[in-house]
Amino acid sequence: MAKATITFEDINVTVTVPAGTRVIEVSEKVGSGITYGCREGDCGTCIMKVTEGWNNLTEPSVLEDKILRENMAGKHNRLACQAQVLGGSLSVRPV
Amino acid sequence: MNSAKLLNDQGQPQAVPLSERVHWIGALDPNLRTFDIILKTANGTTYNAYVIRGSSGVAIIDTVKEGFSADFFTRFESVADYSEIRVIVLNHLEPDHTGALPELMRRAPQAQLFISQKAQSMLKGLLKQNELRFTPVLTGDSVSLGDRSLQFLHTPYLHWPDTQCTYAPEEGILFSGDVFGCHFCDSRLFNDRVGDFRFSFEYYYAHIMRPFKEYVLRALELIQPLPLRLIAPTHGPILRDRPEHYIQRYHQLSIPALHSELSAHQKTLLIFYISSYGNTRRMAEAIYQGALQVEDVRVSLYDLEGGEVAPFVDLIEEADGMILGTPTINGDAVKPIWDLLSSLTVVNLKSKLGGVFGSYGWTGEGVRLVEDRLRGLKLRVPIPGLRVKLIPTDDEILECRAFGLELAQELMGIRENKQVNLADLS
Image 1: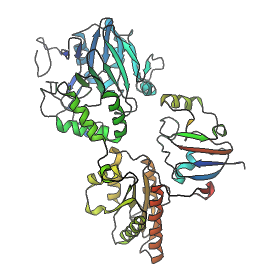
Image 2: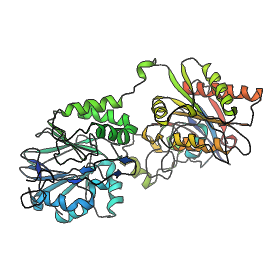
Image 3: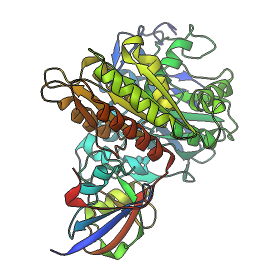
Image 4: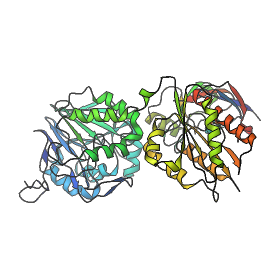
């Protein structure tokens, strides 16, 4: 199975995950400060900053884009409950 | 006019002037006793809405709860005609301020609706209409009414994500939405005429604004520079006597109380426990000893049995982390722990450090259940909870010390890069 790594910069932990894993599936288990509300891409609580590996993520859906816009998300921000890592390495941190 | 009910000589609700161009067109609800489930009010509330007249048209700022629409419309009709309405501003979409909106839009279809950037999906959720026309606005946006204008201030989370304030510079009036409001019903309306509402003002802040202190401070940065003659909130007295006093009070209530006691590099860690036979207590004491080893962690140990919930909530609000110890009784954590955890929605817990431990006899679910609750409250729980079956052995006490040490190090950010595999995480 293809692998990827996600580094949570706020706690300095790197996790090896199967390609296709959503950030939400990992961040709580390791205790990152990324926090969640609805967990289904509607509330914007879990907006995170992607510091490396932006192109290793799935494209945001139309709905995710809308929520990011409505919450005035900054550049290279994604919803941790939606973004899936496709491969390679990814670094993220809470906003 | 009958000032007790704000009626004219014919017994009809009448608008109340704030200035020559601005009127209150809200409603009194003296019989309300519970608001939003979480707040009590001993003498009801008011739903304040306002109308402002410029040389090129009229704007309405907020509406009222649906059941009070008749008073709102009658008061509006006493000072303006629906055909004059060019602008409707909603500072906050909660139903007690938007209840009259659908009928208002039917009566004034030409009006342009202004809402905050964050209010867009909420408006659709409230009105269930896909064809709504509205203009989302942010700080820096404004709308002209000719010789009067309205400037918008983005003030999210005061009290919902959508909330904003609207400033009328030519009048020196801030239409502040729920900010600076309170549930207090007095038909004399103005703060220099109503009864003593200090308790209501502080109580309202404690329940509505307190979880969002950081956002309050950001909003005050926008509000404090404004020349202000009057603050017109959506609930309670209109603040025309010393409006700056209420801004200062919000500032006092929103700044951390404990920071003066701590050096900049220090962090605070609280350990709460409750114990029936002393086993969870022995774990707590060992965790405390472990955490004490980390310099600059100010750690405290509290037995929940010896305190009231409210002061503990105050402590948690100011702390950087908390560790909870609970036995498991009949498959659950014990009630004093849940009582504490169910009282924390009034404070901001986001990204504080959390940890859980406890002794158990049969099954030990309590620790996992509390961990899940801490995550639900948006704490981060980096180290799996520690459980001991009945009486801790000497080795288990050492494990407790290590648990305390590790959590305290985590709190201080003392950590090497850790490489783990997802499959190995519990």
